[in-house]
Structure formats: C-alpha cells, structure tokens
Image 1 (cartoon, rainbow, N blue to C red):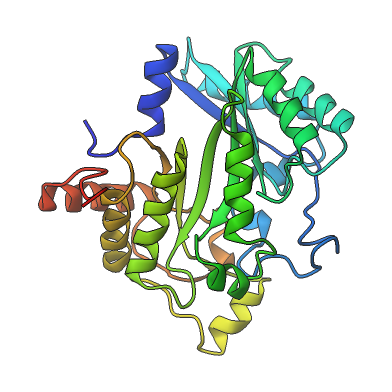
Image 2 (cartoon, rainbow, N blue to C red; image 1 turned 45 degrees about the vertical axis):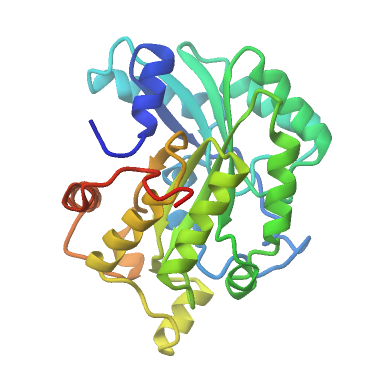
Length: 305
C-alpha cells in the first residue's frame, strides 16, 4: 500500500475495477493565447510537449475515445472502465451548447463512466458549472483546474493570467454540485522555495480539493521559459531535490485528497531543455516512495502540525 492516496486506488474503491483515462483533444482554445487575456500563454506551456491528445486533433471526439478504448482492450485491459479526459487547452471555454455537444460525444462510447475536464479557474461561469453538474448526476465527473501555485507573485511571474482568488472562487462555486475538483500544481517554479510548495499543499487542504496532479517544472522549447532558461534566470531542480520537495508537499496534504500524478512527463524528449534527469517517470515515483519510507511518513502527516 502506498503512503499516499493514489488516484488508481480511489477509482478501484469507487468502481470495483480498473478505470483508465483516455486523453482527448476537443479543439478548444485558451483565453491566455487567443487574446482574451493574453497572446503569450503561460511561460512554461507548449501543449504538444505533454499532451498526446494534440496528435489526435484531426479525429472527432468520439473517434478519439473509441481508439483509446480499443487500444486499452488490446493491451489486455478487459473488464475495465474509462474516463474521457478532455486534456488540451481550456475545455470549458466555449458556449454551453458547444460544450454539451462535446461532452455528449465523449460519453457516447461504451464503458465510458465519466468525464475529466481540464480547464482554468477563470473559465467556469455559472451556466457552464450548471451544465457540468448535470452530467455529474449520472456520471463520474472531474473538473481539473490549472492552478500551478497558490502564490500570486508566482502566477504573475509565469503569466497565468488569473489569481489565486480566482481559483478559490471557482472551487467555492464548484463545490456541492456533485463535481470532483482536481488542482494541477507545478513544483520548482521560478523563484519558489520549498516552503512555497508546502503552503500550496496546505491551502489545497484548507479548500477541500478532492484531488491534486503534481508536475515538476520542465523547460521546453517554443516557450518564454526556454528563453529565460538560456539567459540563466530559471534554475531547475535536481531529481533528489524534487523528490524531497514532493514528499514535503505530500506530508502537508490532507490524506483524503487523491494524488493523480507525482511528476510530469514530456512526450517528445527533443523538446526538453531541462531538467534532464537520468530517470523515467516510474523511477521518479519509486524514488518518492523510497523517501516516504525512509522518513517513515505518510500523506497528511504534518497537516495541522
């Protein structure tokens, strides 16, 4: 048994079987890219570097889900269920009827038990939340909010285009609608220290988030962060540093919050500038597990302490 509450464990407890997410590119844009907020986007973001769904952009939503399900079945994942993960860009950024068509299409494939909708905390007006809540009455639904940090100075530094107060507002308006709430955070952001990550974990615990997806800061080509890195203004964490920061984060995270991910993963290695660890995703997770065991600690061990 892991010393933190994994998403896979949560899903198995809820459904009694394995449940897998199928990434989907639904063709939405982002207000931080199309000029509604900014044209530059977040300083770290180059979507094709981390989203396999972008490569499926020529397929319909249903075709993408069908192919994802078929691929899982070919791998022997029989008797499994699936969640359609609307991953790329901002998947609540559209008119309600457009969103309804996309969500209906994603749920139209057999064995799809729910939706996981990636979005921004400043892109969930009440009519959109009403729509998402209507699906949550019969399906398992997550809203995955890109937060990255609870510190406004950091959010400005990486050009997020929203504040922590926007995230708090989104969470408060989402709560009690039957929708699960996941926050995305990045550990090792520019000018953040170890305690800054701890404070983000504590704030997520106080807000009552249902899940968290943890990424390490990665500097990829075609981003403003890449230019800054080459100028020497963006340090990145070593693997050892990251493992210790993650464990600190977990110790200060409420034990009821599900951990969806422990590190990021760049799909195209030639795009990655830093950090270039000599370890894959599985090895990073193993290193976190070993450090939690070495400390003889668990998720939430220091909440309230």
